[in-house]
Image (cartoon, rainbow, N blue to C red):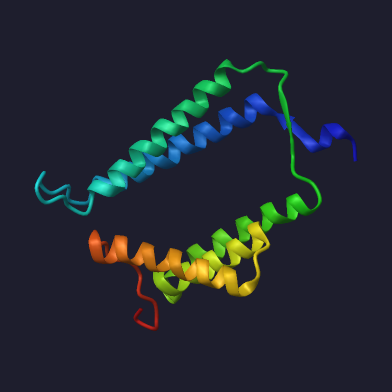
Length: 159
């Protein structure tokens, strides 16, 4: 394999990533507008999605701007070997999480996702990764479900 096959144009990658981010955040914001915004003293379910969508849109525009200003000759090496395996594993893990979320629920699905993600990226042992995943899942549950009262998928176990 030649080195040209393992690298891509950095400018094109930034422009493509920024454009995809703009498109996805615009769609996300369009869906978020269907949710009630509520009042200043009692925000509705749509406030957080609008904030997140706006931040992603701004970040995507910044990526587009940076790509537009960068030299066309710049290139970036694609991951190879174990790094490519980690990238593909991460993508598979994200897809599995999204697909299984309605069935597993946020609490169980989030725990399993965090557990496998921590093992994949950090190399921590199973016990340490399980403790970290439990803390992350519990904090996410407390913040979103209890504090912000966001309805999350409960899964077949009802958790």
